[in-house]
Image 1 (spheres, rainbow, N blue to C red):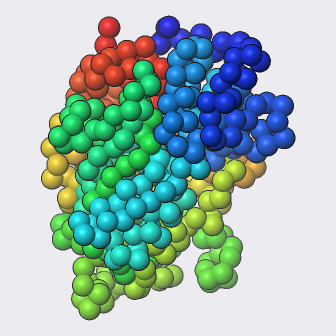
Image 2 (image 1 turned 90 degrees about the vertical axis):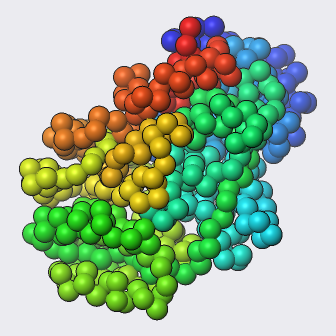
Length: 470
């Protein structure tokens, strides 16, 4: 098997092989001639069009083991699909087999020790719903429709990053099916090297069938977006940067360039206007929230102000409806320590050129609790960065793909010289091996060694691939 040429893994499946495989499954086996195939193969990013030979909607670990063994024995390209949000479409493949975990969505909350066990097909909305009833939350992302598996294995930046760290910093253990079909548990006490690798190393090491998280005491936060006119963006960005680098961990907020959606509750006079925004999440005492936000509002009174007390699941799902499945996406990402006047001027230039109403640029804080973990403590190797930036071209019309892709690339190229060189692995496209190496920095070499131990033939290569050391 040649890990450097994944296309060589695609083999011609015989009907007899498929019919031998079918009785090994409790879940649904979908082939190209089945009525549900077209719907089953669709991806979150409509820009990506893949045609797998088989899709298996697994219902349990036994199904996953059967799929991994079948792919390995038949030299099939294998892709793993959890929540399905992957930007470059790495939850599917051409001509191979897709393990679809979307029917594995069980969750168990243990209130005696505040743990949350989550199956691999869950999305964060599932977790938020289950944990909120117990006054708990797990650090996640910014959309509740995002899959738990992909976001976690890539690190996990979100509203709670400054207070409780990345998602992987609340990960206590995983259950996994390895390339040889074995089922293992990885934690701080068992398969320690594997546990280190999955905390940021993506889906390179096996199929995670369940995650065990530490839950945190979060119920109602003070949060939501504030919007300012575009001409104030440079001042707002400078103010926000200084604030977020010096404020207590309880205050988080990410900066964005956006086009105001043409729907309620956004004021009609601002609809379709390009603006800058900060989306806040304050986890301190609600009684102190107004005092915390008073100087923010005094610095530059926002044109639109939706910040206030809000249940955490409501904040987490606030933008779900704006970004449904089936839009066209193109991402470019970087890490930064600081934005000087030159960088802010470049942001002003390209932020004013948002090519479509859905396109945006976000800067997420990754300091606070996340920054107090060592660079080598997990596979996620940019703990010394303060910000994760992503430029995103998005639109429902594929006719706009070239235009928004060009804008995203130009924006990224203009700011990249000021960056730290790597990018958040969950927000890069299929950009090649050197970009993957840059995403892991000094941790890449160790990851290749662990990959060689657990997946020496690179069965799990449909991902931001880490090649096994030879």
